[in-house]
Image 1 (cartoon, rainbow, N blue to C red):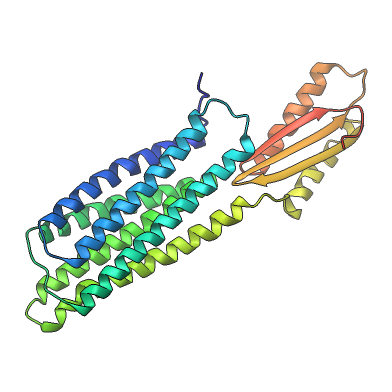
Image 2 (cartoon, rainbow, N blue to C red):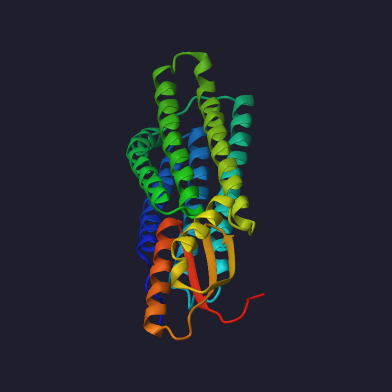
Amino acid sequence: MHPTPTGDNAAKESATRHALYAGGLDTAVTLGALLAASSSVLLADFLKTSLEFVAVLLAWLSLRRIIHGRNHAFDYGIGKLESLSSVFVGVLMMLGVCVIVVNAVLNLMNPSHISGVGVYISGAAQLVFGVINTRMALNAHRLARQSASPIITAQRQLFMSRAVGNAFIFSSLSLSLLLHGHGWSVYIDPVASLIVAGFIGFSAIGVFTDSFNDLLDKTLDEEMQMLITRELVEHFDQYENLQGIRSRRSGSQVFIEIFLSCDPARPVGEVQAFFDALRSSLEAKIANSRVVIGLASTRVQ
C-alpha cells in the first residue's frame, strides 16, 4: 500500500510532472526545427533542451520514489535522494555547457549563415516556450519559498536558464535574419550560444553549491537549538526532566528527537496531549522538520 503524499510533496510532484510534459514537447519541436534548418545555435539548442529534459525526468523519478516508495523507513536517506538528484541536474547542465561551447568554437572557426524553414519554426517555439519556462520558474520559486527542497531549487535554476536561453536564441535568430546582408552576422549564432552557455554554467554552480551542502549531515545551527530550548522552557511545568535531545539535518529535512520524563501518576492521555501539542508547535516553527517526542524514565545515551 503506497503512502499518501503530503501537500508539499504532491505539489512538487505535480509541478515536476507538468515540467516533464513541457520539456518533452519542447525537445520534439526543437528536433524538428533542427532537422529543417542549417544553424549552429539550433543544434546547441536541441542538445541543451534534450539534456534539460533528462534532468527534469530524473527529478520526477526521484520525487516519485520519495512519495510512492514502499515505506518511509529510511527518512534520512530520502533527504539525500533529493540532493543527489539535484547534483545530477547540475552535472547535466554542465554537460550542456560543454556541448554548446564546443559547437560554438567550431562555428566561430568555420562561420556560415543560418538558413531553412526550421529557423522560423524555432523562432516561434522560442516565444511559446519562453513564456512556459518563465511560468515554470516562477512556480518553482513559489514552491521553494513554501517548502525548501533541493529538487525544486534545482528546477527553479533550470527553468530560469531555459527562459533566458529562449530569449537569447530568439534574439540570435532574429538578428541573424535581419542582418543577413552583413558579413559579420555569421558570428551572431556562435556568440549568442556562448552567452547562453555562460548563464547555464552560472546556474549549475549554484545548484552544485546548494546540493553538496545539503548532502552533508550536520547538527542544527545554534538558532534552531535555542528555539527548541525556549519551547521546552515555556512548558517546564508539563514534565519533570529533560532526558535528552537528538537533532540532525539530512538534505532539506530536519529531524528532532526529544526524550522527557513525566510524573508517573499523571494520566497517559494528558501526557500524550502535551507531547502532541509540543510536537506541532516545533514543527510549525521549524520548516521541513520531523519531531518525535518520547517518554523516558532514564537518561538516553
